[in-house]
Image 1 (cartoon, rainbow, N blue to C red):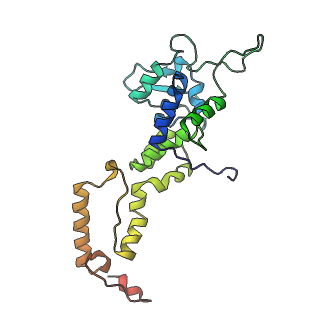
Image 2: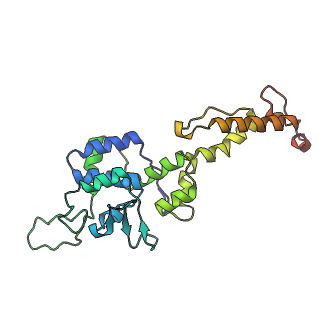
Image 3: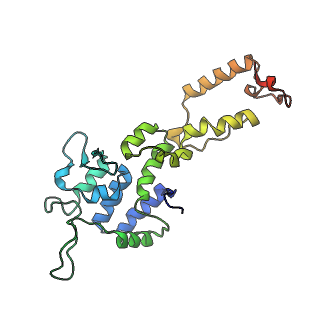
Amino acid sequence: MKPGAGRNRFPSPQEFQKLLKACGKDMEAEVLCIVLGTTTARKSELLKRKWSEVFLNVPAPYPLVPCAKNSDPQFIPLSDAAVAALRRLPSLGKHEYLFPAKRPRKEGVPLKHPYRTDLRKKWANICKRAKLSDLHIHDLRHMGASILFCLGVPDPIIAKLTGHRGRTLDRYKHMSPAFRAQTVDLISRVLLGQTGKSTCTPACTPTQNDTKRKKRKRQALKGRGFWWARRDSNSRPLPCQGSALTN
């Protein structure tokens, strides 16, 4: 992978369930997976949090990240599942940090940080038990964003949640049913007279009103003489005549 190129590894919901099962009795690992997977937060944004920065007893629970990667403060909204998971952390009411650092085995060795930083060995063991390869903990962030794109959530809302800026969201574009409908589906309709079978989830399928609206639009275009609006027509524009599609 070239330097600066973004990864395109998007764990599936089935793989996520395997990860949770592989956590076993490791409560910290399970909570980490649930919160990172459901919030699209960065690993460091969660590991560095103090309990004083986490607000669970409010109508819209959230942890506060005073200085995110883009240097702005960020409020990470929590789902009910994420709130319940955080309440199960052993550090609740006992430690300043959500994920406190483990004491060194050698006496007299000072802690570099009061919170956990290196999860590589723990994550590698979880992935091994789950029989998943080429999976980074940061890919959980991509998973949440990809799910939102698949469900047709608008870009600005996803960017607001993830904190992405610029062209970073472009890596998820191919998963958006709206992007597909407004690009390749339109081309196929014009060139082949086909709409194709939808591969969207039930949450992404068009409503009855959408179907009626498309039917009215097709009838209007058919009346104006557009050959590609006619389902029963095999006619095609004459080659090299630009006026064939203008009416």
